[in-house]
Amino acid sequence: MRVAEVAQLVIDSDIPSVEDITYTTILKIKKLLMVIAENVPLEPNINKLSAELESTRDQTLKMLYLLDRAALLCLLTDKVKDYKHLTGPKKVYLNNANLMYALSGRISEGTLRETFFANQVGAVSTLTMPKQGDFMADGKYLFEVGGSRKTFGQIADLPNSYLALDDIETGSGSRILGMRTRISDNHDKE
Image 1 (cartoon, helix red, strand yellow):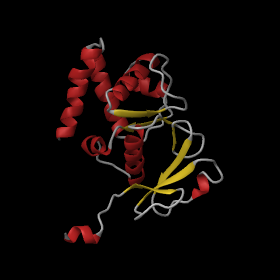
Image 2: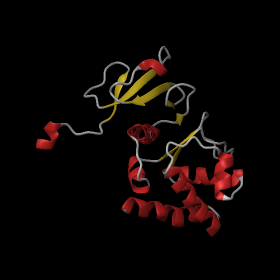
Image 3: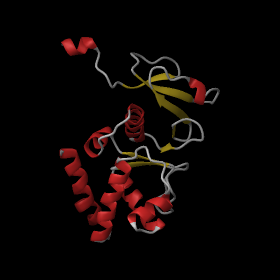
């Protein structure tokens, strides 16, 4: 509940302190966040989102980018984000897994993995949406995120490509440790 309260505070207090927005826009931002929370990862149709929010396309894009700047969302675009020239994102994630649990009752393991990856790698690299794979970091490194059985099928023979895998003990070569969602039995006994 605390995480949901912090998200609410960011929208009610932080965003209006740096942007000149109306109370109606604040309500639309809250609605937008809930629509996204129920549908992550969202490959948005900006026109449909705008109609659902009873908003213009430009205002909807501005709200998405405000939530991105407020670290409540992670917007993946096919180019480096430019806050002066807003373009529709290719994919939208909640900023972190804690927000997923706080705002949504439905969480798929794949979305959890991708959200975690985007949050962690996005903190130190610029992420974009590649033509193949899940994430491009700094315009050079291609990542496909998945479980221990994930193969290179989607990114085979592409330079600087890596699998960020869950549920593996150690990485090797282009198979790197993405995250651990389960604690082994040995840790449970300690």
